Length: 153
Image (cartoon, rainbow, N blue to C red; front, side, top):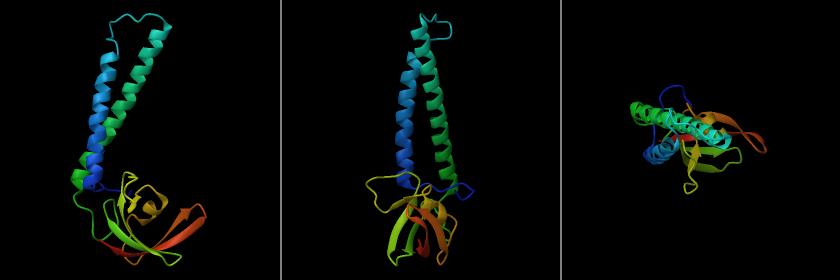
């Protein structure tokens, strides 16, 4: 994103904590179904099931570690900067067609939040690190376009 620890909005933090709780529950279930190292595995189908569960456990562990790290990073980053755009910032921009729009930069897409632009979207990536008055260029399905940052809060 911007190179340092990124702030984490309260909504994004709560969504990550919910996902983490769900992942830990799923991990416990998968781990319980995974045989002990000394257990004798039956036929090839049983062996394939064990390998699949072990692979799933690895994926769950990786995502759990990723979320744990992001929650720690978000806590260490503090509040969003008011000088430059980062995750958690609220911005108003004027697009090339003259329309203006206010939204906030977030990490996690939320279908119910029409005023959210994710930090990994083309517009979100182009805005990160910029200030009020800056012009950014980003890709759209119709081609490259520009937007001017009117305010940051």
